[in-house]
Length: 117
Length: 117
Image (cartoon, rainbow over all chains, first blue to last red; front, side, top):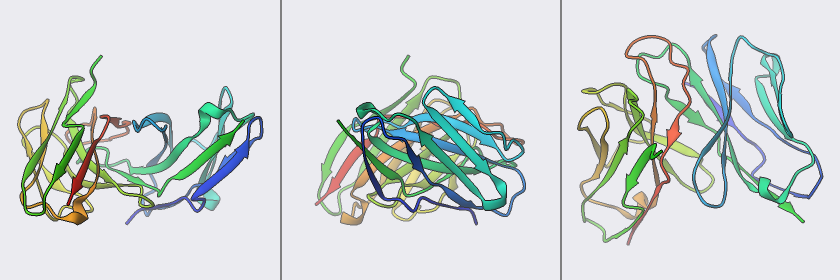
């Protein structure tokens, strides 16, 4: 069975600080996909990134960056120079790739990020 | 660009009442899902439909039934609501492949907040 753990329940930072959200996963599959979703206070879920298990290159998109390390089964998410609009719940998720039954995602518990002005 | 549409957005039920949550997507996706979100538990999969005509149980199916009415629509029914089913329900869809590699992100509806008294 697969599992995703986000040990940080809540994080509070001051605007312009950098913040890293941790994600640790468990899976028996050698091929899998990792995701990050953002849930702002309005409640919808917004896709941020997908990474497959064969690609361990870090990715940067503006102020967002992701560090994928298979050796430690981690897929951490860093926001540089945080802004108040980054305040949201962030979910890490895992999908096993060879699925004949759609893209079932296993989600972590989520991390509530609050960025204070 | 409607994407995934859920109705109703809010519902209050009494214990033992029944109701159906409706979901429709206009992206011609093969796979559809129902998740529930509870505080501190992330999103948990209730049921999913890999393709039109098929449905399967997810992690927490007890107390629910689903119907994949056609390719666009996937409904979730509570036959006899219980307070433990108080939650926010999300419908999602993905491109999916009926058999084969599934890598796709999920596209979520805005959620339906259900309270069972």
